Amino acid sequence: MDDIKLVVGVYLEALSEYPADVVRHVLTTHAKMSKWWPSWQELAERLDLHTERRHRLSEILEAKP
Image 1 (cartoon, helix red, strand yellow):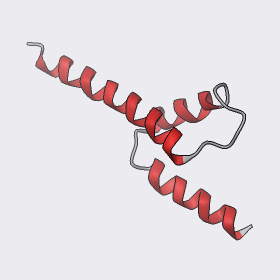
Image 2 (cartoon, rainbow, N blue to C red):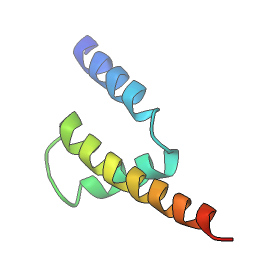
Image 3 (cartoon, rainbow, N blue to C red):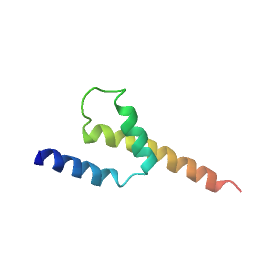
Image 4 (cartoon, helix red, strand yellow):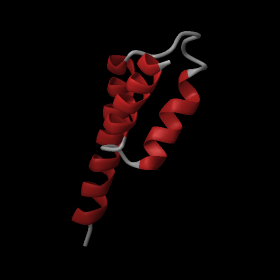
């Protein structure tokens, strides 16, 4: 049980670096992609993808006069 708490704590700490809505989207849709508990690499790839899209959109919107 302590191992699970440790893993969840590490995931939570890492997830806190991403926007909440991106985390919610990735975590709720991942079950449709895999029946297994996701590795951090799998989650990070998807989190980075969605966060990068957001950054690019924000840059585009800010560049418009």
